[in-house]
Image 1 (spheres, rainbow, N blue to C red):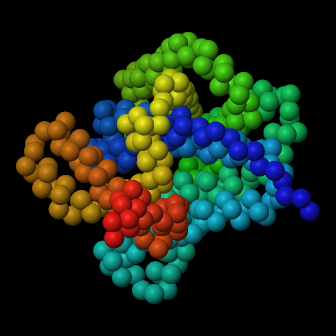
Image 2 (cartoon, helix red, strand yellow; image 1 turned 60 degrees about the vertical axis):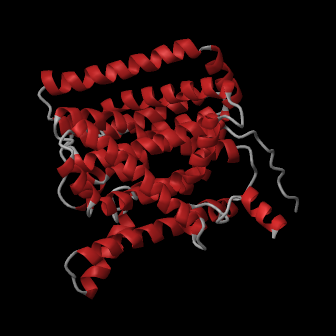
Image 3 (cartoon, rainbow, N blue to C red; image 1 turned 180 degrees about the vertical axis):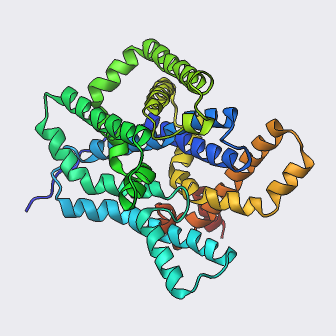
Length: 386
């Protein structure tokens, strides 16, 4: 048996930039949401914009998978071993960390009830508010062979495939947003937990997949139309503000409902932000140098992005035990204390990630190979002088 030849592709640094910015936005909205109510107009407006992150993650995941595996004749089982090996154990370990934190800080439920509670949260991705996205990733990995087969079978008709995917997503969004949930488990799962199910994101998954399949042509077209696409993205962001304003002030929707992540109108800011970030990334890519400060930040950030995503709620909780109450008692101005808290969350998250990157469980907790305690240059210098 011959091993399929894997063609090495240049790293897509602009996608790394998109990923790093998107992870930073996740930390931003989760941090702000702990101290500013999202049920008021300003907080709801910020949430309406920042919900783009979940859809961008799906698009980027689809892009990366199809870029790497669409033309690779690899069996399903090797693919599953590789991809699930990168997500299942981190999901279980972080679920254990956060569930353990809850158990340690709340009243004991009893052994049997605690076991049921743990199993329920692990199965449904509710161990902590951010872990559901790893379940979405698993669904994408699970269905990737089917999605790849569909994309291959529809060569030459990818426009129709895109229309079908968006029809499915918009239809599900409308169902959740406008049709009352039925009683029982069906309503709880398919309405209340719709944000954990792939159909809610399928349009963005196929968008990323087709962008990868047609990458060379797509990227060349983007590079030759940067001004136009920048204007389109800007118009989309302006439209986002107008949509939110009209829904709150003209249609009487509450800020929380107007910012609903599963509402069909969320497609507008999500597409606008994804396009804006791709345009920004492409402009930067055209000028990028390996030794540039931003290039180094993006390279380091891409290695630490998942770790920051996994640990930032822990950082928020730890800071909430003393730092956040103290900060808010000393500084009365929200516009000052919220940025300071955000910087503290970023810093503490990175400190935790740096520690985990150098631990024996680096691969299992932050999905990266273990790093040495000393930078390579310093380590070599010490060996040579030693």
